Each structure stands twice: as C-alpha cells, then as structure tokens.
Image 1 (cartoon, rainbow, N blue to C red):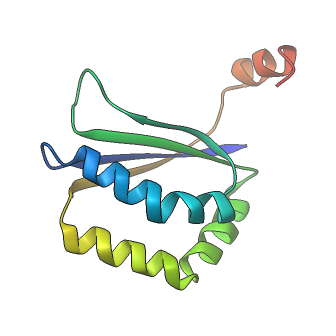
Image 2 (cartoon, rainbow, N blue to C red):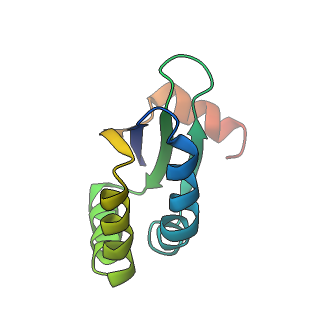
Image 3 (cartoon, rainbow, N blue to C red):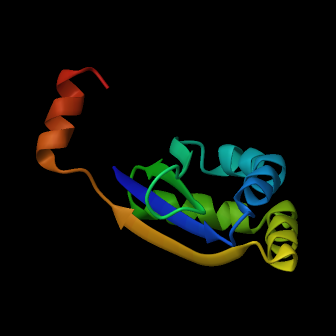
Length: 112
C-alpha cells in the first residue's frame, strides 16, 4: 500500500471557504474514483491555514488509474476551474509515502 499525502495552504481566513467548496464539489468525485480516504484534516496548531488529506492505494499503478479516471470526469475539471477562479490556495504539496514494515506488522496484529 502507498498513501498520497496532500497538503494545501489557503490564504488567511479562506480555509473554511476552500473546505466548503471541496466538500460540495470535489469530495463526492474523490470518493467515487479514489475511494480510500485515510483522513481529511484542517490544522489547529502549527502551520495554520492548512488542509491535509491522505488517500490510500494498492500501488502507484492503482493511484494513476484512479486519478486518471477522475481527471477525465468533466465535473472534476469544473471543480478545478472554480477553485482556481476563487484564488483560495497559496500552495499545494503532494507526497507519496509508504508504511514501514514495523507499522504494517502493528496494523496486521490489530486486524486492520
């Protein structure tokens, strides 16, 4: 398994608007195409004005297949266009991470 870690930095005071836009337009599409959301958060301490979400995939090929299918959906293009027009974001970071062997063993031992 790999995880796609995404960190979005919004303009000050714009986090709530970004989250609302995402929830109404992007969340349904990402659930449909990406399916495995591991978490979706906003920061309360540290680097403020940040949104963090993680998506799990079997491997990089699974990620690419799912993201390409989502990108082909015109509704995804509409969301990206609206998000860009609103100018809510300052920065977007994307990292692909994989669990360590000891964490996989821990998770397996817990049944999950």
